Length: 284
Image 1: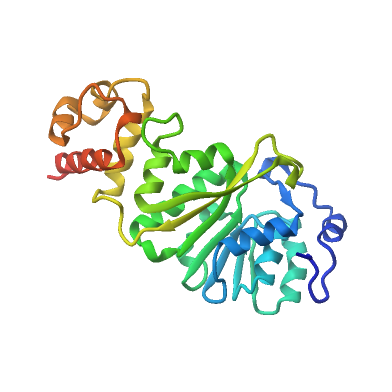
Image 2: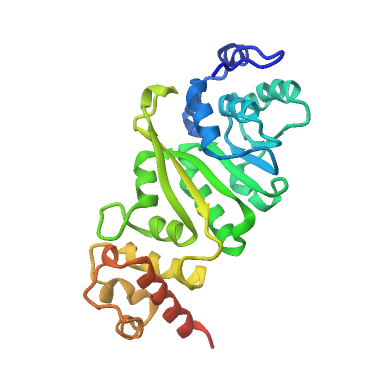
C-alpha cells in the first residue's frame, strides 16, 4: 500500500519537515510500513460508519491507513504538539473525516469520543498502554456497547498476558479482567525492525471484542479487589494472600475454593465466585 493521498507528501517527508524524532519519554515508536499499518486497519473490520478512535497517532502512519481504508470518521488523540501540527495536513487531505484532539488519552473517556459504533485502533504508547486498557475495560464493564472492538498493538509480553490461561506464567489480573469482559486473541506479531526507533522487544497486535455481558456474574470492583489481593502475593496460597480481605478461610469456603490453591491455578469462573462472596460480605 502506498502512503500517498491527494495533495499529501510521503510520510518520511512530513516527519523530516516537522522534526518528528520519536521521544522515549512519550513511549513513541513510529511505524512507516504502510503494508503493516494497512493490515492493522483491515483487521479492525468495516470502518465506514461511526467513529474510529486512534490513540497516539504520532506523525500519522496508521491514521493514513485508516482513512485510506475508508474510515468514516477518525478521532485521533495526541498529546505531542509537534505531531498535532503534522496531522493537520491529513485533516486537510481528508476533509471532515479526521479530528485531532490535543489531549492526554488517559483523561479521555471513550464514551465522549465520537458517535457509536466505536472502534479503537492504535499503536499504543508503551508507557501508558496497560493503564489505557484498564480504563477502557472499566468503561466496558459499565457499558459493553461503548466500543465495538479494540485492535491494539502492545509489547508482546503484555499481549501474552491478555490471552493467558490459568496455570501459565503469564496468567494474572490483566488476563482475568480482560477475558471476563472481552474475547481476546493475538492477530500477529510485529518485529522490532518495523519501528523507528526499534523498541527493545517484539510487539503484537491484539483484538478485543467486548462481550454482550461479562463471562460470569460478578461485581467489577469486587473482582478487582480479589484479584489484586491474590496476585499481590502470587506465590502464596490463597489462605495467606486473601487475608487483606478479612477472614480468608470463610471466604474461600463460601466460594468453594481450596485454601491451599495459588492464584494462577484458579479459573475466571472461580475468581468471579470469590468476588460474589466478597461482595456479599461487604453489602450491609
